[in-house]
Amino acid sequence: MTRNLARFVDHTLLSPDATTAAIRNAIAEAADLGAYSVCLSPSALPVEIPAGLRLTVVCGFPSGKHHSEIKAAEASRAVADGADEVDMVIDIGAAKDGRFDDVEADIRAVREAAPSPTVLKVIIESAALTDDQIVGACKAAEAAGADFVKTSTGYHPSGGASVHAVQLMKQTVGDRLQVKASGGIRTYEKAQRMLAAGASRLGLSSTREVVTGKVAKGDY
Image: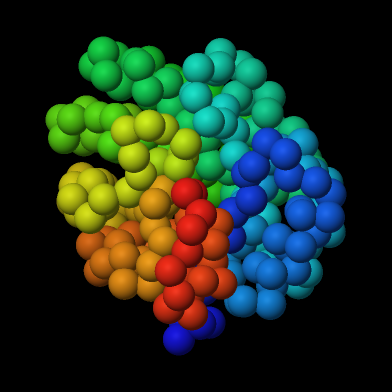
């Protein structure tokens, strides 16, 4: 059970007070569990990643309220420092305003700074958006060349991933993009519901507890 579920997981450590030792431990735990990747803050890089484990780095995190050129520079630096995947946060306010051209331009700036084969995931903070806004943000991500749309940062007061949001996101992007569910996934059962709803990646901070069927206390 453990490794079957773990292969869908970006094992995540984004705490602002994460120490060097905590970062090393997170990498070792991700490798031990068989996680798909370890997800870290950009200042944690460069780090040594074991063979078979990928490195995901966040960008514009957690607010998304950064100028696009700053996000682009952060993404470019992350790739130069060894990132395989970049999880960027959109300007949530722009999505709430219905300014999806601006959302698309923001994503495109990061995509151009971190071109394929770097995987680009776009965090839309789905719990803060209406269904129409979720659809608009997903369409903007697709138009800008993203590889994934992602539900949440795990830090927004509106909440994290929901089955409804994952289903709506998957319905919008079809098989053209993938969906990552993150935020508030603290049980094995909820993780499985997210996968059944259409997610192909999960963001977890308490990965060991979730994949072994224990109740996790983490908030990511």
